[in-house]
Length: 552
Image 1: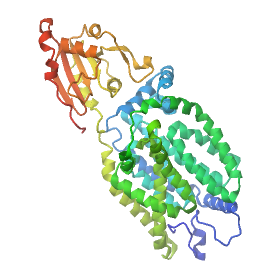
Image 2: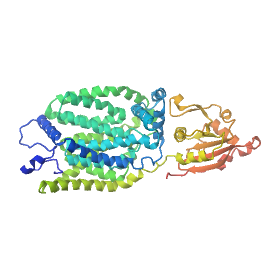
Image 3: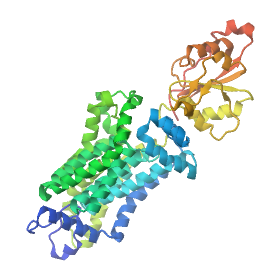
Image 4: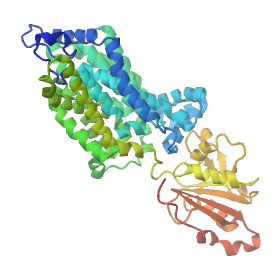
């Protein structure tokens, strides 16, 4: 099989033509008929025996990479948020999403049921994302076959499977892997509807539209690529595809309107994301999690725009418009984040695969007979995947390490549980949702230090943060030892506490032990006799140490 899009003009080889190959120029058919005939040949040539290997190889590769060491990396704050929200009762979850994270409600509902079935270990929470990424890689191969050739589809699926960012977010208890999958499925349904229009086809596509928004609102921007595909396709087929597409988008998109409106009202929760030109320059690295991989795929992918021909508009809009629009609106929408744009990776993989197969086409076209020509084509596909996989391997290994800037709660919890005494209390200081993260670490432990400042839990407040007591002196009155968990990077571990709480701890306790762990400090405060309180007011500061600057 030729890796190129055009078939080999050889009568003997005609029965073996690529199922996606272009029609002969001399055939007197309209554009719509040509599209339908291409689809019919794909359906005949792409039966179960041909489709299953095409889907299975990229899917198996992605699944193997995502499942490897999937539970090794510590959970981080966003995953802790996923666990917290998904572990709430449906009533408490309703209260939470009324205030924050309405856009993640579908994922939280799914994970709520998943936890009931499979538990809440890091591995259990992340496996759905691994499965979604595996399905995404396999489905991308099917989409690539429909747009180009089976070889192009297989290469695109395998390229997506070995990207470091695919592995990283295939091991993440967040909805980004599902966004990648739905973007591919929706695009595939659109292409099928354009090639073989029917009520069933357009209804299937309409059903996929709300799924785009329900996985992540930014994923809806893939519709820009769909608009481009419809405009290009309708030049030959007339206005009917445009009207059908418009109806499908309006019908499906209407189901996301309430979420979009409430999500806009909650946009202040990501106002911390400040974007500048440096973020745009670093986009290849942050999107692909490797400068070398990012530059290689982007460079080859841009060449792929020439090889994509009539599909160039679809893939260019899919790959380029979402980052450009989110960057341009970053000052008020704050959506320019690599994980929000992960769904653009399949477009880059398709473009890169199209470029490689177009360049490699002449190398395989001259080979005779057909079997060696086919084998040479698959060898070239394997070589391309091996080359990218070799380049991506350091980035893939790095995805298994704890995230830089994330506290080492595993070691901290082990210390507290080993050295705690009856009656111990615990206090949290910082801005990284320490209480929620420690709740995850201590979720299955019966005897834990008492959260002495807790007045109203996060479930009761309808937020990710709890309400602390107004009278810290009274709340700490019956506690002689307090474990202070601080993620504040400054010299004073009490700086992030309220002034009243900090004053109580400084005047009535002294630091008797300090553990500096990656990105977090654990300080054991011991109550002092009233006669010594004046002399120990500054004692805590004498025991301050900087937290360790990195993660293992």
